[in-house]
Length: 72
Image 1: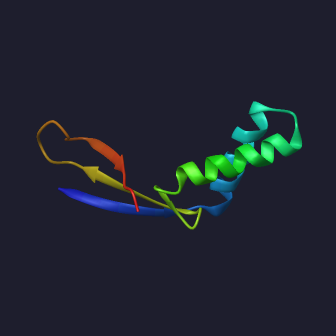
Image 2 (image 1 turned 180 degrees about the vertical axis):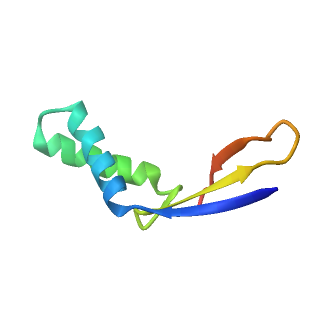
C-alpha cells in the first residue's frame, strides 16, 4: 500500500530556516540573504512555506518501508 500524509507547520519551517541561516554567519544581513536562498531552494517541497507531503510505501519490493518527500 502507498499513501500520502500532508503536514502543516509554519513555525517549524520558519524557525528551522532561521536557525540554519543564523548558524552560517553572525552578520544579520548575510543571515537574511541566506534565509531567503534557503526558502527558494525548498520551494519544490514546501507549499506556502508550511505544507509538506510525504508518501509512505508499505508494499513489498525494493521501495518497501520507505518514505519519500513529494514535490509540489
